Every structure is written in C-alpha cells, then in structure tokens.
Image (tube, rainbow, N blue to C red; front, side, top):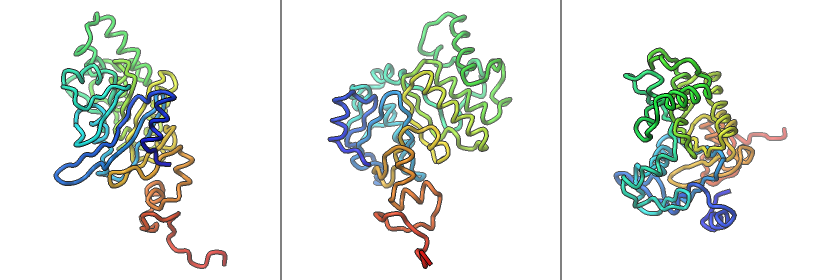
Length: 278
C-alpha cells in the first residue's frame, strides 16, 4: 500500500506523525533522487527504509535533519515546518534526534567515554559527575559497561556500532536515525545490533528510522517497511505485507534474485513458468 496525501491528512487527524515529508523533490546534477515523495513516520514505531544503492535513503536522513534542503516540497518535524529554517533555528530540532552512522564514526582520538559524552559537553551544561553517570548508563544499556577507558582501535566492529548507539542515546532523543547499522558485521554480531534497536524502541519508546539493505534486519526490527525505487515509494507495509507483495521489483530486492522478471509492474516475477503442474 502506498500512502497518498489524503492518507496522511486522515492520519494526522488521529495524531500528528513526528516526521512528514510532503511532495519532496530532490536532484543532484540533473539526477532526480526524489520525485514528489510523500512519506510520514509514526511516533514510537520503527520504520525501515529499503531500496537499491543510490536510491536516496541516506539523502532522506539528511533532509530530515535539515542538512540538505529539498528542491521542492516541505518537511515537518512534530508539526513544525523546518524546510526554510536557519542553521541556528535547526539546532534545537536536531537535538531531538540521535544518529547512528554507517561506520560508527567514532573519534579515534577520544576514548569511549568522551565519544559518548561528546554531545553532552557540546550542548549541555552538566556537572562532571552527571556526565559520567549518563555515559555509564548509556554504555550499560548497549551491554558495554566497563568500556569507558577503551580506545576505538581496541574495539571490534560490533562494539564500535554499540558505542555509536550509546552516543546517539546520550541526549535522550525522541527519534533515532540508523544508517546501515548492520553493514560489515557477521550475522551473529548483526543480530546483536538488531536486538539493541528493539531494546531501545521497547524500553525508551523512541521513534526509529532504519536505512538498510539487510532484509533479515529489516524483518526483525521493522514495524513498517518502505521501499524506494527511482525516486518513489513502490511498497509500504508490515513485514508480512512486504513478503507477500506481488511487485517483481520488490521481490527481486527482498529475495536478492536478479533473475526475477523485469516487468516493472508485474505480479510475482518468475524465472520460468516452465511446465507448472506437470
């Protein structure tokens, strides 16, 4: 099911979504990334955004944070139109978000403690004992208690991702944005990250937006899955609805099967109908 402006209007009457992208267009060098994109994100739910590389998933996160401006359309955060806000006015908006970067993006020159405390020191005036308490609390939440004095080079890939999540949690965000959180991890470690995402949503009631190529992760953490292709939404539903979606483009992606029918509007693509029933 693809949501229209009418759907969004009806949904808003029942309760304003925390993020809304309304009729968004964005292009780079003549390459259209989004074409009249209409998308909303519900509070306290985990929405997974899927699609081939280069489809604009990470661009969408930058638009939500106001790091990029749409060429056309509007972006609303909790009912506030942020499209034309200045950098100064965007600061309090961005402080409501936590960001988990694809490569963890830890500062190599800082120990774990200072990586997690970075935003606290930048944006809040807290006593040192309060900073230490928050750092310990967030590290414990991602099962990394006692790692405060380690350096990034001493951490495994999965540990770095979890430190990145602890840093994102330090400011008690309402929304957490995850950019490819399981990329580069072995299946067991990736599932540990999935469990952390579920734990945050369950215990903190955060709104989560997860950009990923990892279908195992998407099915596990997502309340709702949205698939993008060629600047538009081609599928939007629960994990069960996406599994059952008959569009060949969707099935090619979720099954990782390039041999499925190239019919862009077809029902379930088949490699070869052959002598079905023989």
